[in-house]
Image (cartoon, rainbow, N blue to C red; front, side, top):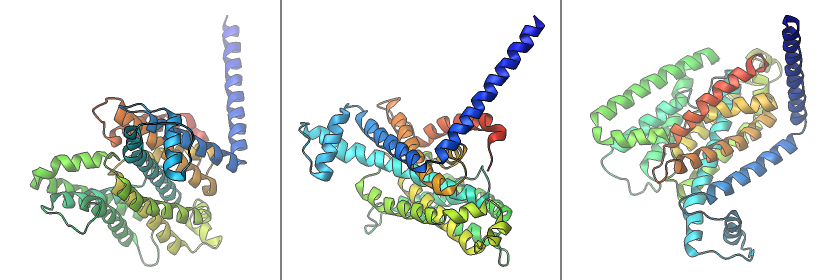
Length: 372
């Protein structure tokens, strides 16, 4: 009996080892075909966008959605009919919302890739270097201002959040800059210290101005429900520019994975490239925060997942994370607006509830197989 037990256990271990080897071979095969991977992810994103637009209080057939978009965008007549109300729901409400979720998810995921690669820290995310603290404090100040500025087209809060995030990162960089170098450890510590200080200032302002408390709390929980075409069109070019610049610097990010000394030996001008990468990451984060408020975990778990599956090469990691981040946040936003309809759950709550267990699962499954 004991021999049978030992034999069955040994057989189970062999099967598990064989499965792991097959999985590794499959992942290596995927990494060798980046065009196929990106094509599949692009198709998955398109299907996710249409699926998200189809679901709501008023259900609309996916074929009708395709026909409406074909008519409005390309002037195509696909031979289908729909009501004016359905067209208005798609064009004015659901399309800007799902596109807003997609662009925010893509921007935060790409920013997470940049910060994790630059800092060589798998726990780095877009809010690590003070961006969340700067954005939240600036938004709190904007909420507390008792008057509106007529020349500010999209509202003072998103603009304040955008510049608050950028200024906070610049402060962190200046504090961490020692002589001609910016040590990574000092950068992380400075980011933590500045985030804590800005968070304390925000809390003090909320207590002094209780009328803004509820609005600030709702904003910090995140969401894209209030995003319209104007704000979306203003933010999208910034995130797109950040993603393009990040991809242009992808070889430098690959070099930084070896350490700053090795990167310098490979011909990378370390300090200017480091500052450029910080600026690119802050640009994408600030633009995403301006559109959605604070939405956590996207820039943390999406790069983790994609890096485990596709490897650390940033030339594939960045575009794949862009697409996966968009898919993840569109699905999260769909859950946020439908699971307790007509009541809506803040988007940041959904990403935390989904992201935290998923992140723990990734860590447990990867174990020693995860290499940075």
